[in-house]
Length: 67
Image (tube, rainbow, N blue to C red):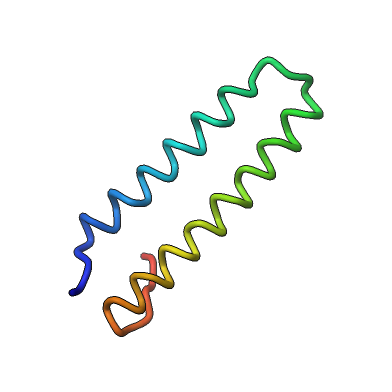
């Protein structure tokens, strides 16, 4: 079963919202700590996106290219 662009977009939007919420939760901390936490969350987000892309690629049987 191939994923539609809309389904793929929904997954990405959900991940972005989740990451943004986590960054906002840590907003009361010191600036240096904030930047480290934000960087870690962005790295985690990127890793999650790679997993999603790999899953979509396996489901669709072709490489997933973001435009």
